[in-house]
Length: 227
Picture 1 (cartoon, rainbow, N blue to C red):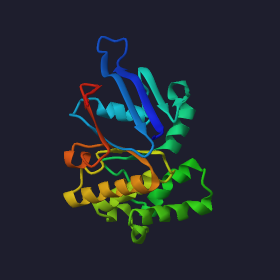
Picture 2: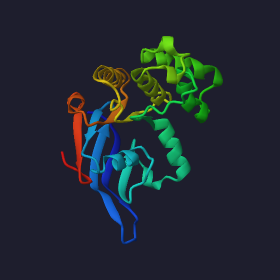
Picture 3: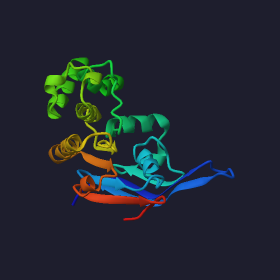
């Protein structure tokens, strides 16, 4: 039986609480994600999926309900503990790769480790090089980010997301700005990491073809889990 990585219980999220403009965006959301799962999160614009992703990624807190990560109730954690848990448990890949254009591919992958300071300095560059090899970019390690193609930049972003060896990677429309061939290559790269390393993925996408290749599809409609 698969072990649970995270669980949302009756999660609600409201904005402008206590004001006449108070709006509830998420309504009693229940969701479970197991270690090693690869899930697609889908829904129309304004459905609440970005808010849900922010809560799962510990970038925002629910108004009510609970988010448990590896059995730990995050509602009981202070800001410093939340930051530490996010940095060591969750990696992020965005629609726009958000690389530092003046840095090389290797330097971009090194950044999370340099900020965290957990890795010995001598190991950081070696690990970054290994991650670039894992995503097929070992020969491009010294290339500046702005001298790489969109698909290559997104592969660097995937390598960067894996730098801290996270249990979960949140990928927000990571193929949205890529051509079909590059999008398929980036998706298959993430799938490969999922299969070989057991890293869980929660992929936000509007691409039904890619979603069908995931383990499950979670559909959000009007702030509720629809299917």
